[in-house]
Image (cartoon, rainbow, N blue to C red; front, side):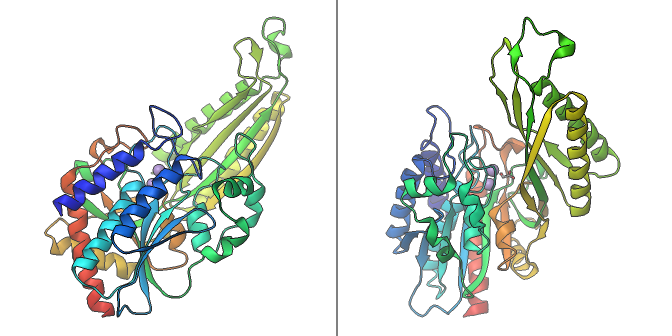
Length: 412
Ligand code: GLV
Ligand code: MN
Ligand code: MN
């Protein structure tokens, strides 16, 4: 397994160089470097005799169907888009490990069909909405999104066509009834496994999240001549709201709603000049929490706060919801099999919730779904220093071998 682990890590490092921005890894949905990622994945998959295709939403899919395989197959995969300034392993490692699992299944001569999916969009960086790839695969892609525009004004429809895809065929990306389940391998992206000195863990469930875009609109004007009491400063209004969000959610996390998190991670001020009062400020907002009721309650309350702040300052406010994703539990049967595989390898059997979102949360609504996390050194992710330990990658492959044997027994 050492060789497999080293190859997967080396490929992740190579793919990290396929980027929109020299010097750092940024690969948003269907941007040019995605073609190079697809070429590398295709090479790896075809070397294993897999049949490779790209569906209409841009997921690259590799099918391994050995002779004698049953009617139902296993889905494996993760995503290949990234946040700006990303690390090398978020998503991509799960795809490379899925390909290695196929190699292991071949070594074991398992009569099991496996499809590996490299999901095209999980982070939601380009259109503010995540999980586009897994939505298409589960038949829940909302065609109304095709009209949405990215920061450069390019519609989703146009982005797909420029990449060589046909949006009219998105419906064809949906899976049928011939699926046993979906397994996603992913780095933990948090500090728990490192603190407990454990290489891998089975995911219990994935925390729900809401994402919004808010636009505060004031009046751009001269910074030197406009008295303070006559300004309609959109950036100051946004800043007041951001501070209020942090204060209230910090308090909630410490009292009524332990574990709740809310983040404003993006702000675009116009005209974004030091001597001009901002005429508009657009901010992202996301909130994540296990209880959907509490998450919805906080979302409503924080929007009302934004409206009150805007009104008091004579500022306009528009907001749009980009995502309302429920908390999901992973499939009990597949998770039990993953735990049995971890145990068979002699690793501690640890289960863990996921605060990060994953395609698995969309897949779980359609097919039995489970996840395996690998320890994240330093608990760091969404950052260039994100890393993995070679021994943990090997561990995840050992778990894969045991899991595939168990599954093979069940279906064979
Ligand atoms: C995906 O990385 C997310 O949780 O935002
Ligand atoms: Mn991510
Ligand atoms: Mn990810």
